[in-house]
Amino acid sequence: MNMASSALMLFLLVLYFSFQFSSCLDALNKGYSSLSVEKAEQDIIVSENGMFSAGFFEVGGNAFSFAIWFTTRPDSQNITTPTVVWMANRDQPVNGKRSKLSLLHTGNLALVDAGQFQVWSSETESNVPTELRLGNDGNLVLRELPAGHILWQSFDFPTDTLLPGQHLTRSTQLVSSRTETNHSSGFYKFSFDDRNVLTLVYDGPDVSSTYWPSSAILAWQAGRFTYNSSRIAVLNPLGGFDSSDNYNKRTSDYGAVLPRRLTIDHDGNLRVYSQDRSQKWYVSLQAISDSCTIHGICGANSVCRFDLKKGRKCSCVPGYKVKNQSDWSYGCESIFAATSNESKVTFLELGQVEFYGYDANYLPNSTYTGCESLCLNNSNCKGFQYSYDNGAGVFKCYTKTQLLNGHFPGGAGTITYLKVPKGKSFPPSYEDSVIRNSDCSVKIHREYSKKHVSRFVSFLLWFATAIGVLEMACVLVVLEKKRECASWVEQIMDSALGSNYDENKMEILARVALDCIEEDNEQRPTMSQVVEMLQSQDCDPNGEA
Image (cartoon, rainbow, N blue to C red; front, side):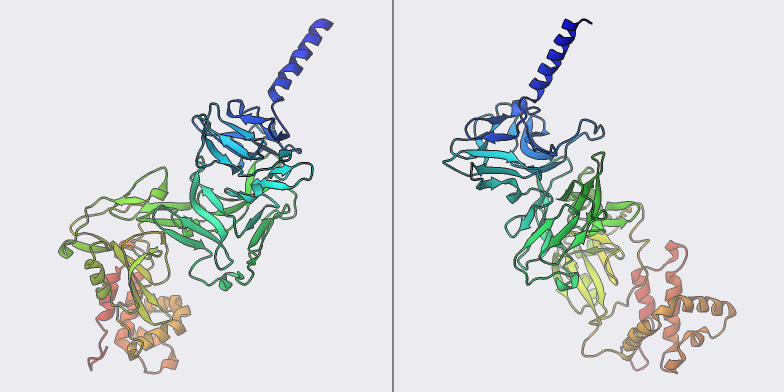
């Protein structure tokens, strides 16, 4: 190749790369420049350090949003899709033709679609020169020149992500994406509530509920402060997250200066991500370890089970089928027709399954029969929860017209019963039946009174507390003594009780315990069978309960 040919080749290469990057900008200036969707790959604002880019991001077929994302290096071959950290029009994408973002003479930053309809704007105005520039921290700033007064900045209007140094305040919130690939607004929100506490909220199509921190505990029990009304939280570059409500956490790689982001993901969990040298993201901190406690994650009429190794698993309750196999948030629908005829329905025991909230009725001191009747008399009732309150010493009844936020295992002593048609067989909707694997440590179905508690009930409560830690040892002794056909009841009782117990009732309790630990699950008694066995010795010779 001669000198002339070499010079020509060099000129063509320079010309090619100049054309490719001639539209890459460090800023937009008032009245003189705009970004066009038709040149989305070239019309990009890049931060000075090259870490962030802003421009038109394709969110679907011929659909674009103006966004900010982490710039992907040419050597990062494993990164196929840039990580978006902010969007202007996430819920109203523009057409891939003739749409543009312009900094107008009025000082307003405006995004228009193909029909020149304004889809989004900064709602600003200024009579002096202005500039739109992307900072090294990922903050897109519109400011006046030369004074530098900030008219608008993306950090004040987050979508689903906080970058280091970006504040979450009383007037801002993070809203998840709908799915991993659908960037429109989803169902989960991260913000301060009226108590000055950071919360995660499920805001679905039909219901809304707070799931973090748990509503079962008070704010101070979760380590939160409610008296600091400043309402500010921030992620710092070293990996520390600090909030005015005392929610202060550190990432697993705290101390290292790395690209980071805090995101509320489409599954409702709040996570901090760190980026390694190959530009791959890894989770360095997350708010919720058991994802089944996230509301709405499996949809209505389903049960969520969580395993540390296998992760979350959603399953329809018996008699229901999944609506959308690719998106469990749609939940499950019934495969049988509901009926108001009490004689044509029965109740299927689901074991230690719990459905959070949305109770049609609540009875603080109820019998099993009373709870069942309450559900039978309501044609909209889908089932009921029957749980024992250790503190109050009573059974509680919760009837359900909606089966939402189901999880297994539920609270201790809680059993759920599902209303289904009689005479129909409903195969388990998941591999490991909740019914077969439910805990057999059940309580007696009995109506308790706070004013009067029988001697036998008082003894049972005392016995469970005092002897509970020795249960396994007692079972082993019982097994051995049964083989020897000896008077084994006397030998497993605490001598401190003297003769203050009913030997027949103690024998019944021991036999129930043995039946509950049968190796064959099918041989274990159901809740109703346990109740029958316990109630068979439930009255003393004087006829008192």
